[in-house]
Length: 381
Ligand SMILES: Nc1ncnc2c1ncn2[C@@H]1O[C@H](COP(=O)(O)OP(=O)(O)OP(=O)(O)O)[C@@H](O)[C@H]1O
Ligand SMILES: [Mg+2]
Image (cartoon, rainbow, N blue to C red; front, side, top):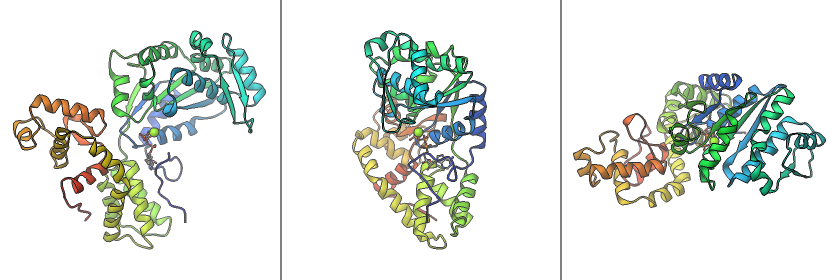
């Protein structure tokens, strides 16, 4: 039987739950040409949300251009990707692609290579010398095509923070911002999985993308939604779970989207008819085991003071970490030192300090840490 729980890939159909308010806001923004920046900790559901909204907005006059910067290492590759995806999204067949490329790129000569499937598979390449001189042509390509073809284009850029590792990141961002801010027929949706870096790119006054659009901090999916979802997915596959147990699953992983699905999946797989306490306990153990390699690596890379800081947080201290008692009890050095530790852990994306309190960003790492480092029992009932 096919599993009703999905993780490790974006979800947008049956396994997608709720997010009514987020869908409404993002959808209304994009329809109204408001550039939007989406920020959240890892795996809360940014990519899934954009995919869902994009699918709803796509029609004859609105086209979606989807870029993923995960494997893009420099400016040149970015321009190639943008040009290719823009042409693909706005032209139907090969002859049209070539015509579009010729018509809109005046100073750059694109080389188009066609693969085995001429409908989806083509590659575009440029001379870097030409491109470097006339990069504006590529940046303005979406707007030019949208104008001519009377389209609204929505450009979604996933893992946007990757551009911070290009050779001259600030110059690159300035170039983008300078051109993109004039686009009337193109709307940009920028998001990425490194929360801390994304916040830096968009919330710091000195950065080129400051105030580029509506910054949406994606919240978690609410508990009652998770309970309904979990119960529905079990019932739909002829298995049973009580409301209490569904609540337990979401609570154990602090409503974290990816982990709710992963833990539910483990429990669903271990259940023939009805979920029991024992199944939940065993599944939590399995969840920790499956992620242990990652957690061990992260833990090995900690300095001693960083370790001590996490010990305090894992023991339930979320505020006043630089107070005299905490500094003494957990051997954190001085209060100035605590700030330094915190900064390093924020940069490693291990903790979150929004709202003046400090939390583990990854709820399952916290469970693992409590069990393996603090030797605490994980209570599942
Ligand atoms: N609306 C949703 N309903 C149910 N599950 C969801 C939803 N959104 C996300 N998930 C779960 O969370 C997982 C991660 O989602 P997604 O990849 O969209 O997050 P992300 O924020 O883009 O992650 P990353 O930070 O790694 O890029 C999905 O594989 C799915 O299991
Ligand atoms: Mg993502």
